[in-house]
Length: 139
Image (spheres, rainbow, N blue to C red):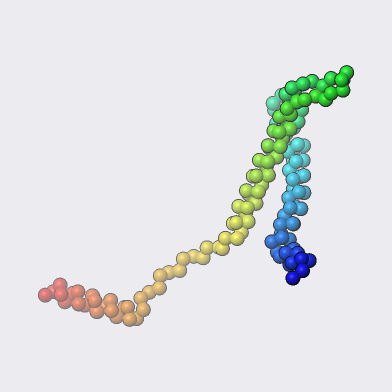
């Protein structure tokens, strides 16, 4: 079997195609979440905290020096907070999506069926048992 034929069979499997579609949609979804967090969620939070812009928050370890043309060295923890909030938004959306899909996949529970009555043979045996019990109790 040629390598090309094996590769074609591999690609033709449903799981590989589903995975590729998921990755493409996930990439697009990532951009939406980034915009949601950066442009919609963080500005009101920054406003509530006194006009703080999170992406500008940083701890400067070494300031920039124009004379030596060295760049600033800083820990940009505000950008990290933005990314952390993006992750939390994605996690919540994925959780809700998986929960919804699982709810759709569960079969609708059918009402429990009534227990079937005894067969004619069982009913006759029960009647004989009861008759024997009343005879032995009378003796």
